[in-house]
Amino acid sequence: MFESVTDPKALLSILRERHVHYISRIEATILAHLSLGYRNEEIAQRLGCTGATVRRHVADLTHRVFDPTEIEGDRDKLRTWVPLHSACCAMAVDQLIEDEQ
Image (cartoon, rainbow, N blue to C red; front, top):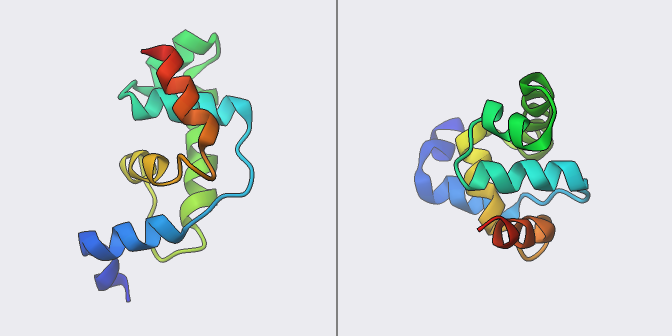
């Protein structure tokens, strides 16, 4: 099964089906900045926290999204997941992105 996950179509299919029930305001803010291409240290500076705090939130979100699947989660896959779930799991992220731009 792991080989099928490396296929881009299979990966997108799994990502579309993977919902997260609750994303906090800080997680949504971090996801918005992540989606806009900010690095962890840049996000930390903008939010007034440490890079370690941002890394922890990104790691927590990555685990929540990908652990139930056979996909090895990472930051880029998390960025791919966000727009696929902007109408359900990550609704606040879209608004935060609009506010940022």
